Length: 211
Image (cartoon, rainbow, N blue to C red; front, side, top):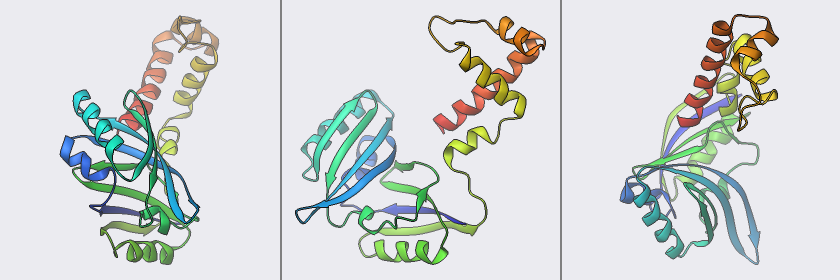
């Protein structure tokens, strides 16, 4: 398996240049791409980080963008439908997969892709260089981590067991259905020990979500 980190800028992008304009960081994942009546469309889900007023201004800007056909928002989350023939997605090989969501900040995009073929990754970069700035920050062979794995694989067995037990028994529901003390008794360990495992598991999940 090959995986690569890419830094990309294409000024005709419907959203990335706006991160510099409004001082926001946006993380997103393309959902699909399709052709209909000779036109190309792309659906995306994205999450905005930064000043709320700047988020409001960016959203209003998107609604006026000629490439954006539909966009809806719930808090800092957006789902959009974009039209554009020369969008990067048109060159995206179906064998690729995202290791992390695309990060957009200060006018640049940061991609982390996995592929069984180094040749395909290089070809992808060369294709989009026709209309975009592309810098390969890293490309190497190995066992990559998809973003959800970064949480689960870094947990110890005891941390994972504590988190899964807490979730299954309603600890994270409102109101809580069980206390830490009762969870610890279920596992037959001291409360402080169980709580330490649970807090470390929670911290690792939060670190990945907020990264």
